[in-house]
Length: 269
Image (cartoon, rainbow, N blue to C red; front, side, top):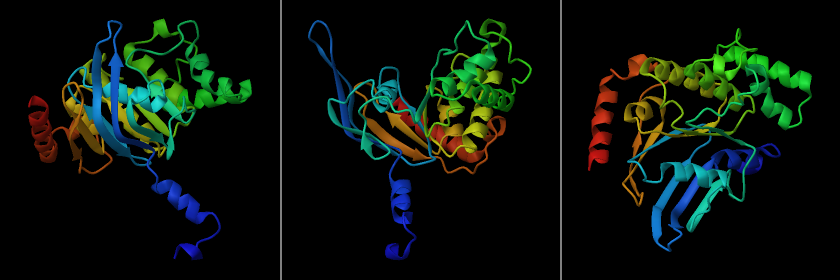
């Protein structure tokens, strides 16, 4: 019984049961300079559990990236509520990390200084921040490139720097907006495996935006399919394939092929 639990255990259990992210019947309308109203998202509901990996797919302009901007507080819903860790979003939350489609590295800083920037900004002593940076640089396989500058790195290597920049801050929520779309297929597959390994060691929640249906199925626990603008939720698919997953292999599993067909039919319609 809950009354028999140690002090604080009940509150901890309730906290874990609270979704990391929750959209409650959210709609978002933009007003253009000429006074025209555009509905980007309509009656959208979604709950992301602690430690869950969710992918959102849909046509261009359906509101996928808009959902991320509402989680960060950069946009406010016209109707409905967006909550993070059980509380309405009121601004940028330090527990959230964001990986963009474009590189977000500082071109005038080397890899070490780029990765250490987050801890330094949050008040860590420089020696501790640099030690943390070196640890994460090693984790993403760039141990020999700490003194290199972004222009000296390949696209895949810069993405590794971006992941290290984000994970070093230990985000409880990770938002990713088509982070690997500009990479070639081989590098993208490698980066997807890197992401799964890093995420598996954190216990954080992920919302991953992508146009790549196969990427969504291979990475996620659930895939949310949005309709064309105004974006509405068409269906949610449970990706009932075991983890850990190897990206170069999972695409050939019969269940993967079956899910791909069903979700593609939804998108096509």
